[in-house]
Image (cartoon, rainbow, N blue to C red; front, side, top):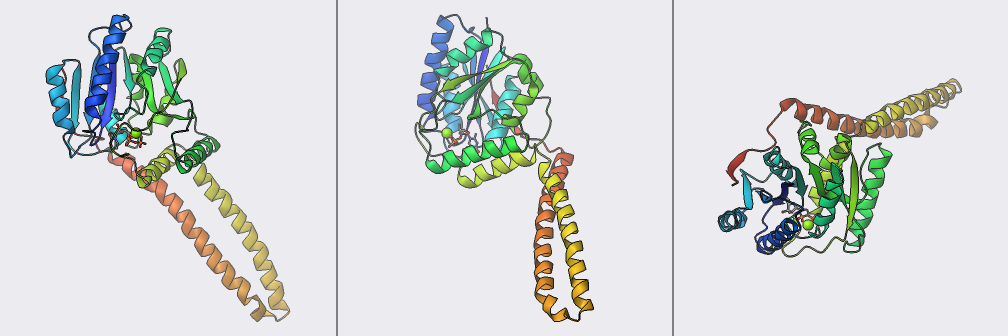
Length: 314
Ligand code: UDP
Ligand code: MG
């Protein structure tokens, strides 16, 4: 019988956890009754350094129902790292793992279909949003732009898929072989390979509380995704350098001709213009290169991605 783990990162989610856990318990009951999953299946909450009653709720849930477990991180490390901590804890204990958000935005009813697809032999099942109607126009257009940009940069990424997905035991073990510090799961999972499919679901509004992903975090996340997967920006720098070099040669020729005809003062504007323009472009390029150097630095440090404070798992 399939042992299924549900991994749920939680950051200050006291408002939603009682309802989420109630619905998840119901879902586990139903799946078990339908003999789709076995009795060893678990819900694993990851408390990502919450400042509210989240861990207390997780602890009491695990007292009431042994199917609920928790991992508490020593401090807030962000959604991706929290998810990774949960996946690491689930690794080797289950046949399949599903990652989902605590706020009930990922429709729990899609789990049935994911498990069915898994039983059909798929090792990765992506939850894909059937519409973005519940998003603001801003979020929708920035998300679309992001997916388009990623594709342009040559990154294999599944459209309208966040981190709601099922991984088989094998796929999970493979995922954890990627040891990079800046782990952008959405980009890594397609790299694992194995047979995969997707399941469409309707993304709901957040059940309660506020988004833990303000614009700033979202932009950083997108930037992370791009810089940890694509080296095309740095190629662009090389291209830009070549173009500028060519242009400046022509410019130099023009300046020389002007000098020959004694019209040096006339060239002053052009000269100043190019100095400033080049200065600007050089700085921009340095910035981009710096970003990559920064990344090499981070990777070289091999810092732990998370430090676990406590583990509760029966
Ligand atoms: N989350 C987390 N650590 C963070 C931020 C968010 O574990 O630093 C969790 C959060 O509790 C939720 C999931 O990640 O379960 C998605 O966050 P949220 O719903 O706030 O993002 P949104 O859906 O607004 O993009
Ligand atoms: Mg959410």
